Image (cartoon, rainbow, N blue to C red; front, side, top):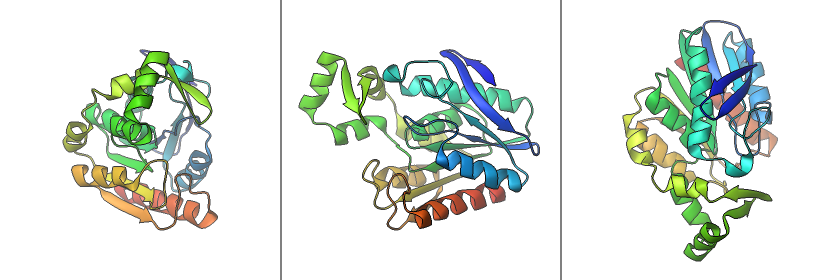
Length: 237
């Protein structure tokens, strides 16, 4: 299935169970059928919650070239799916992961969500880029246009746009319940990002001891899934 956003078609899958829905995002270079999304879909639908999982701009079956991904293009994908869901569901929760952390926060700023859950989220994209790359490397990125991350070229536009995002104001304005789960051994997105989100939104933070960014160990993956599932079921009750 597809909906239209201002930046092109957005692909999604939908499993209907009730008038309460959880919209599942995904991380950079993943898609709507990610390991986490497949597992959450199974658990949430078994709890009589509907699920929509979408491909953000430039990923999966959605339109766009991933090399030119920016936060605003990904936000447009999330908001297009939200608008579709808002016409048929009474309660809507949104789940973001990693890159779709700020995407989901911005979506929650603009749209009326009943709940927001975030897994190993980026909070401030500008800060993350500046933690990852030196000033000289960022200047080189601007000159050359692209930088390689996870073996994939990424255009400077993603950082240039991030420089003007006021994520603190976004987070402070969010009024729906917020839940954040993060591993304390995450070297891709530091735990400090999750702590900032929880502090600024008044949300709940679940820290999984020993877990990395991808929750590779089965026990960490299970703990992450269980915490998200339990919270979403309770908050949408």
